[in-house]
Length: 298
Image (cartoon, rainbow, N blue to C red; front, top):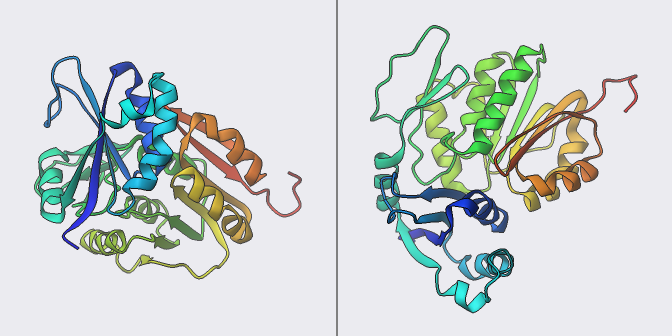
């Protein structure tokens, strides 16, 4: 298929950009950005456009879910809102060219993420990852990814040492690579249901010299794990929650991200484990759950 993704965008008031971006993800977008007069694809002064990316063929389902919520937020009829959406198919070549123009060097804690066309001089203690995202998502640019990387560093600093790590919804594999670097002795599975993501993650992981440390695939054979990483939207998170709980070892942790602030209560209730900590950035929340060690009470 030539066009594998569709760009769906909507002009909004700047004060609502974070909330609208979060709702796009809630409705099923696999990537979101905000464009204004400062970005490469600039909007007119005073105008902000929230841009999302969805799989081709899911446009109707996406808009049917999103439109009523946005209409209520904007207090306008759905038909008026619908006329303001812009849909544009994105080819693989166009996607690659977009990332080459917009993806820059990023630092999260002591991790430095750069595309292959950018050079960087690492500082003392820095770990540099080279990521060319291709058709997959997960460059570390999004707040939900940054929150997980920061949580991994915090877990490592606290003395937590997992033997087995599951990265569900791995994208480009950045979280798996961070975990492999922090815990060299761990077995790590990077799993995604998108073949493009699996292909991209396998290449990125190999290019960064971690092929022998991380197993990449479309499926995961259930096995006990000490750490679950899940940076995915609410519906999928709730669907996979029983699988995570079945396999999480005593003393294990689950790091959930990609959650809106008004979804945290539901996620906590369904998971039923003690919360080690809860961070947020803008509309986004990260929750770290801990399964008590054997002999401890919840």
